[in-house]
Structure formats: C-alpha cells, structure tokens
Amino acid sequence: MPISASLDSDIYPIGETLILSGKISNPVEKSEFYTDSIILNIVDVNGDSLSIVGHDADETKTNRGVGVVNVDETFTILPDPSGHFTFNLSITRAQFESGDYVIHLNYGTLAYSIPFSVTDPVDISELTLTLEKEVYGLGEIVNLSGLIPPTGEPAISISLTKPDGSIHRSGTNIDNQSFSWSWVAPISEKTSTNVSERSSNLNSNLGLYKINVYASGYEKDIFFKVSLDPENDVISKDPLFVTAEKSMYIVGEKLKIVGSTLPHSSDGHGLIVPQRVILNVQDMTFPYDVIFESAVYSKQNGYFETTFDLPATVFTSGEYKINAMYGSLSEQSTFSVVNDFTFGLDADVSLTVSTDKSQYFPGDIVTVTGKPNKLIYLDKFDVSIIQKSDTEVTCGSFICGVHQGPIISILPSPSGSFEHSFVIGDSDSSLGLYEITVDADFETKSLQFSVVPPPKLDTVIEKETRISEKNLSILTEEKLFQDTSIAPRVLSGSLITPLRDDQSNVNLKVSTEFGLCIIGSDENCLVHDSTRSQGQIYETVIIDDMSFNVRYSGPDVRLEKFSILPTSSDDFLPDSNWNIDVIKDEQISRLYYKVTYKTLE
Image 1: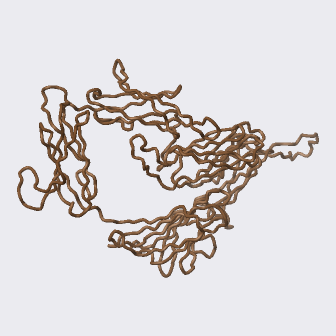
Image 2 (image 1 turned 30 degrees about the vertical axis):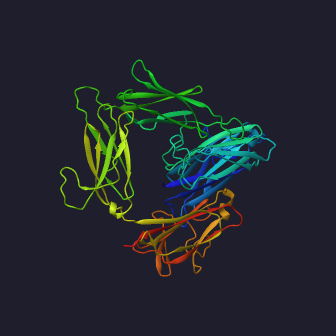
Image 3 (image 1 turned 45 degrees about the horizontal axis):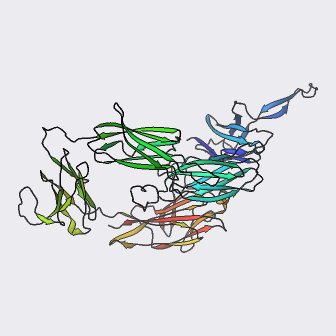
C-alpha cells in the first residue's frame, strides 16, 4: 500500500491524546534532503472541517465581532527519510464534541482516511465497550476499552466466559470514567480429553468468548471469537443458529444437530441461565410430518447438540428440515438423506464392503464397513483379516497368508450395516499385502489393502511456552531422535507483554554464549530495529565467520518476535548456547521459543 496509517484507539474521551502513526512506501525526497509533507485535516459526520477562530485582515472593521472568522484547521506532518511518520493531537472540548470523525491524509496524489469517535465523559449515559476486532488468532492479545457514567467506584468487575464454560474473573481501575483491560488468547489449541458423544467438542479453547463488565448498576456483554483462521472467520450475529453437522447423510448414520445461542447473564457476575432449545426434524413433503423431537440445554458458552438415528425404513432419499425454537426465537436448517437400499423384489441381494483407505502405515487403524443392498434379516457378519505370506503357493482368487487374529462375528446395526476396526502392528513385520474377507451368509466378499513404511522423518520441533523468567539459555546441537540424526536449523521466539503501558519497558535481547549481542534495543546489537522493509524481511549478519539471516519485529511492541537461521540452506546452527534475556523490572511477560531441527541425510 503506497500510504498506510493507524490510530492507537477507536474511541477517545475528551481529555485524552490521539496518536496516529503511519508510513509512506516511496517518500519523495527534495533537493534539500528532506521529504515532502503530509497534509492532515479532520472532518465530522457532516463533512465540516475542524476550525479555529481567526480575524479578517480588513482593519477598517471596528465593530465588535466584525472581522472574526472561522478558519478550517489543517496540520502538516513531515515524514522521516524512510517514510515513517507520527502525529499527536489533544482531544479538547474546545474543538471536539461527542460524535464520529474522519482523518484525511493527503500526500501528493495519495490519500488515506481513518475514522474515530470522540466521547465526553461528562455526558456518558451508558456503559460503552469496544474491542479492536471480533475474531482473534491463537496467542493474540485481546484489548478491551470502555467508558462508564460516574459511579463513585474506583474499579469495575470483569468476567470472561470461555467456550468450555469456565469463567475467569478479574477487574480493572476506572480513570476519568474510562478503563482498559487486556487478555492473551491461548497460545495453542486445547485437545478435548472427554471423548464421549455428548461432551465432544466442548472442551476446545477455540470458539466464542463473552466479556461481562459490571459496576454499580451498569452491566454489558461483548463477544469475541478465537479461531485458527481469524482473517476469514466471523462471529454469527444471529441470537440462534442451528445446522446439521453434515449437509448429506446416508441412512443408517447418526444425524448430529449442532447450534448455538448467544449466552447471557442473570446477574452481574457472569452466571449463565440455562434454557432449553426445542428441536425437531420434519419431512419436507406433504403432510410435513414431524419425525423426531427433542429438548436440549445449551451449554454455558451457548453451544448445544443432539443426535438421532436415520433408519432406512423411515428416511427415504430427499431433503429434511430442522426446526429450532429458543424462547421467542426460531431458526431452520436443511439436510439431505441418501437411501440406496433396494426395496423391490426383482433385484438380487448383494453385499458392499469397503475400507477407509487403500494404504496404511504400521500402527494405523483400518476401518472396514459394509451393508447389503436390501433390508434383510441377518444373524451376523463374519470378518477375517489375512496378511499375505512370502511363499509362492497359489490360492486361487484369494491370497495365502496368516490370519491376524480370530474370525470376528459382528451383529448388524438397525440399518443392516456393520463396521469393524483393526489395529496394524507397529513394526516392520506388519509391512505387506492384506486381505479382508466378509461372510454375510448369502454372499462372501473380499478386498485388499497394503501396509507401507511411514514417510521419512524430515522436521522436528522442540519448544517451550509461557516462560516468565528473565534469563534463559538454549543449547542447539546435533542429536539423535527416533534413531535419526537431526541438526538445529532455526531458532525463533516471541515475547508477549499483555499490558500496553509496559510494552516500551519490556524488550528482548538475544546474544551468543560469548556475549555478542545479536538482537536487542541497544545500539551495539547487530540488529536493534525491525528488519522488515520494502522487499525484505531479513537482515544478514556475520557471527563467528558464519552468515545468518535474522528476522526481528523491533522493540517496544506488544509482541516481539525473532528468528535466526543460517543464510545457506545447507548449513545448520552451530553447537552452542544462545542466551535470551528479557529486559524488564517486575512487569508481566511471557516468552515462547522453539528450535526447528532438520534430519541429516
């Protein structure tokens, strides 16, 4: 982008200072070795510019008030030679009223605009909450700002309801009717340890979060989401949402209905009121019969789910409707069912058998499924698995080999189908060709699959997270991992400083074991500023006669990040200790690092 800029906040109470920062990608340099200026003006929602009081140059006007004029106020910003610029403006009651404004920047033919709002703390009549965005990624910092009418209290209570229903309680001080609060999103996705059907997917730390703010009779909720893909994800604004887990089902499967309601509180402390969601499944052909009906409670994060069987005798091929009712709210969704059972008398009965894959690795689980094409009565399916032997004996249409366990008898499901899982041995002796045979009394079917060596190990990552200490030493050296030689290729890390006021006082320093400063805010460090510039993200440095690419976000930011790797793709990090120091006093910070190893050929 030729010109870009950002503000330090979206809302400014009167009395605070607006801070604008930005960059011109290709600044125009004058002959006197300074860059061209940026013209800034501010307009309100009516398009009127900020103005100052001036006087008409006509001195013959002597009547009081005559000659006084309003002059549109403009500001001039001078970028530095690299194109960076900053601008500070006090939000005063003399120039601003409560409302929305737009900053217009003009640099030659380039233009850029940024909206912001001004509030008057004296005139605040309700609690106002603002987040920088709605969807955050893992490890990102959630910054909440707010304004509150006069309460006579020095602080507010804040509760954060997480997707798993747990509640984190905290608070923050009120300063001139405004307040701010920060929270660091989980650095990685949490895997559920409860695999029961009713509780699955409820223990993830991805999903919808609710912030509840309460103080002396004022209370308000605001929602945000933590996602693996924050750039493309959104928060559903619908107070009620329902859908089938899949758009199409085959008879005999289980229909899983999932949905969400926006959580709400019954008091000022985040207590969730449980309410039931009424669900039914309806035929979409006349007379539109209701096939299933159920009532489920939504969880503390608003999530709900339920399951129904799809028997072949009830569901024919076609579309069906899901209806959800939650108090006075209602929502609908559709799904399709495929029923390929033959109910006529002319077709012959046949058996279909399949595996989930045709090729597996040692230690994998093979899943075989099958069903007849007609709904017929069957006692059982007999399933056997044979591993091919190395002998050259011919066994006709079947392979010769060794049975992998006894013949397993499986009872048919209500739809007449079956499913069987088999664990492949985790050793080289498990490699080879296998045959599954299924005997359904009326017909016997066989199919084959192969077990091949797993792909060769290529990358290993060692990492440590949420380190609060100030000093850390990391050893990078060649080692053995699962009988494979690996060598360190990349050292990277990040430092999170949750509180905005602390970010300029907390910084990283990375140095060698002999004391050479590679990354840091000091001028004597090889890299002491952001390495990102037009056309490059790394800076090349020489350490002990070896060339390295160093990437650094720069100091004085909430999330400092760095990486160090050899310039040549054939080189590895030396066997050495790397010292990481967090320069701080008693501020809160969390350090994360990882070493990426590559296998040696």
